[in-house]
Length: 256
Image (tube, rainbow, N blue to C red; front, side):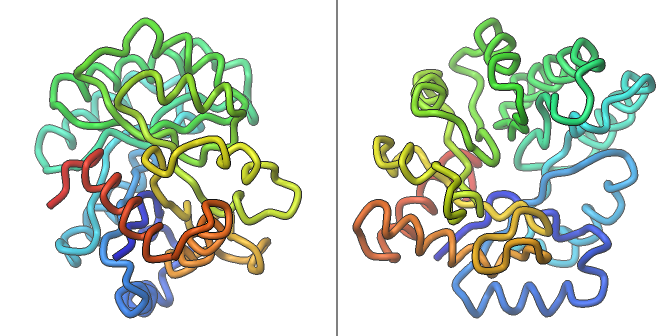
């Protein structure tokens, strides 16, 4: 059994074939799809999908760093109300993104820290978006990490040193997606020195399609291509990848 720990299946790119994609997942032994939120606008479709497929689709709640703007404090109040009224498996997708806009770093840091505190209060893991921002993320976590904090560094593409720092926090996994299949991505070389115990699988669909679908819409059934690449890297059977990464995901997200 596989778990896609990060898919935006509720977004409009899947409006025409969402049910077909879920059936395709189930026929490819992908039995759980974990759904990170983006912003206020994405909440209705996120909740609708998780209510339609309660045994397959599991929602998270948070404010994506790229959605942190001048109105972020009000957005966080609304998101917190939704968090308090519904059941979620994690706080996410949260973090810091300096690829698009470096000028919002301070408010991104504040939104990140606020949501980390929610996670601690509710004893939920966090799902971290870190794009060109590992040092800034570490600056926050160095101050806030404790035994009550756990989570996943979504779409990990960092160095071995960064991977080791994340692992040393104690309760964090590395989310591995389509980038690991890219010919010159370099992630395969990093992972050779990292135990499979520390990894979970994800697609980030509809984004970041693995080879040979790079540049096209990504979808959760493509998780198999990521698992196949990991089986090459770790020189083991794909069933071993499925078993260990599923165990890791069940553990970090407290799923049955």
